[in-house]
Image 1 (tube, rainbow, N blue to C red):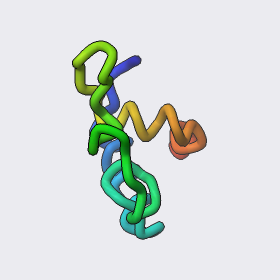
Image 2: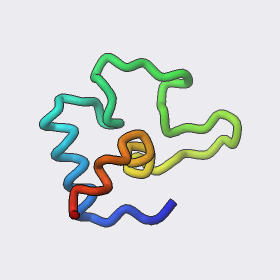
Image 3: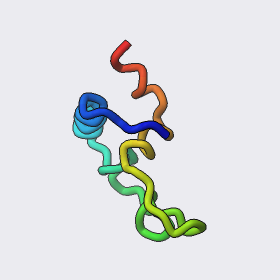
Image 4: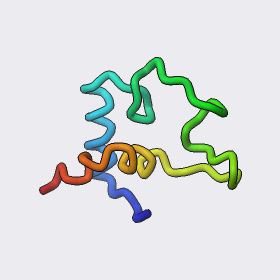
Length: 65
């Protein structure tokens, strides 16, 4: 996935605050297997937080249009 630019990151952070979500764009009471949705237990690698959010919420990509 492509790099997430700073303007998009700011937009996502504002969207999270305005919707009272957790840092991953999910409801604050969300519990994750392994404790973190960014960690891929199959590969042992961490995903970028913003890329994760954009994958789950593709509508956020169109905010600049």
